Length: 401
Picture (cartoon, rainbow, N blue to C red):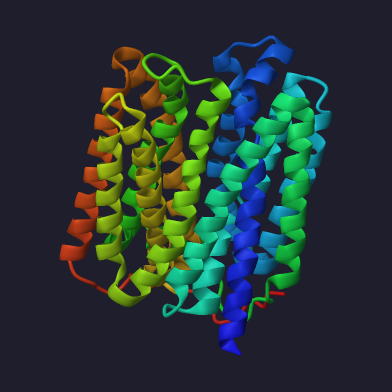
């Protein structure tokens, strides 16, 4: 019975991740079409993506705290439904300002899922199977991000960007229905903790610094790669067509498969060793992209994608396994705050580095970030497993629907 319930949870969070990350990243491949219609430059039109990711980062912690009051499942359902509904409205935006405003609201809506989902899985499944289910969730995130980009990009090129975004919203809507039907009601959320007490527990626990480092530094490296690799592939010596270069996002498939496998392995041998191996694989993949040869670059992209998302899946489950129950939602929020701040940092540094010296400095800076993340994980592991700081919680239970 418990195994069947855990399987339902895994499929529900996979569908939820696919829905939200499809709509989050769908505008990225149609940015040139938006720039043409609204007569904007590349820097201005990129706000369509950054508006959503920045508002998501800022809203993660408040949403995690709110889930302590309203319950995990209601928060996640409301988040996914709101994000999908806004996805249907986006193609109707009459001007660029309204499009940006909708994306800001959509980012806030999406914020109700990631941190709350991590806490929900930790509470409902327990430590034994957490890695495997977290791997499914990350697989849903990566598959959703890839699917949204490819679907919007292809249909936007064939029809127009509005139709492309509408098609992504339809896909996300189907996934939201699947999530609503599959996700069991919460039954393990038995205590609430004050926001500040939970944040203190999440930020003062040195045992969580390893996952936080993976989130910030690892995400910075992967976003840096995918932000500038297309520029490299359409330029000398490759000279690929833009549509062909966009197929590089298929590397996310390797990340989805690797995240599911890594979660299962971490359940058996422990989280720090798997994270360290995954970071090492990411570095190897990064180094493989250095030669001006597609036979090295494309497998390198696939390998670094597999390595990063494997590390991300295990680091995510590490949060749920390590954080004190009263700080679990806040720790998930801090992890995701680091994750999306890393995304912004990686995008900015990659643009500067590529403009200054091409691909080589981008790859080397990324390797430096990954090595630093590995060193932090090693330091946390060497410090031993001291108990997580306790977080006071009221005695009265918080009943969740």
